[in-house]
Length: 383
Image (cartoon, rainbow, N blue to C red; front, side, top):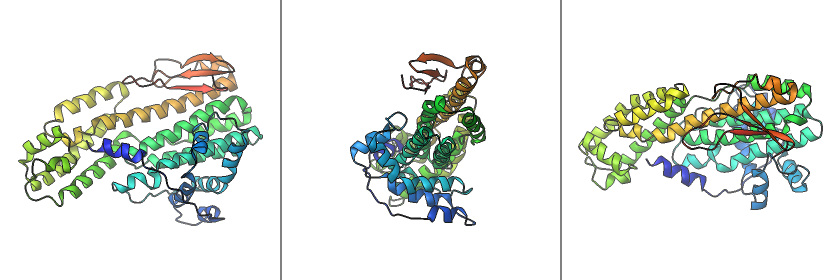
């Protein structure tokens, strides 16, 4: 469906730089009753745009680039107000993004601007520098402020927001993997407690619900200027693929009002898709494929979301796997390999796979799917 086009175009949108200093705003908002963390995040995002390519390359290597590089130190220092803001935002309980249901234009703005990944990346750089300076507690503050931001970007969001959540969270988990052997026992104990306190990723069904409202609202907008009869060439203009147009033409007889009624009748089909996506993984793919087969002729719009919705389920599982591997890596460096072997891979039948790599280790999860890359985490020095 048209969502694939929107996703690609949004990720390719050029970034435009804007930044306004706001000294003291973070600490002020954090103490105001009714404060909204999203307000701080939106200010922080202003720093994250318009970097020269050299700095973008440095930020994209946040987990591994040499932390003593003067250009890396410059980036961290320049990001001071941004780091203050996301730390303060993490202490605010409420995070409300506006609008609740985005428009097409919103897919490149606010929490869904591609440049916002750089906020999490610089937080990882800051944490690495703080760790090297012996400030382990402060380093965890930066990393968990970044994880809080990642979680909030995805929660209550459309499919694209969940992709950003995943990218941000995995950047933090990979940074943690490299840092684990440099942390003393007290910091590792604190990290273990903070990992336990992390909220789980929002289930795929919640994303399908929001995405469905976005899709159906967009279709209604596109249908508004069309006359009572939808012409053969207008199905594509309304955003439907040829196969979807054929099915909907058969269902509605090309009558626009009948199509509008059909949109309302599609809501339960989206809900059923979401329910199946939340099933245990071994049952989920089979149930989703069955939905695609049985509903194609009656609910083609919902079926058009199946592939993208399955991608969301997979990245949710990958986030769970990375979190579990960080915890297993913590056990490995703190308590030794016998204790590590008692840790269970949530996507396997036993322990994680472990391989010695140079000065560190590589942990592998059994999570697989659709010929996708393996899920693995480097512990310590990069291989």
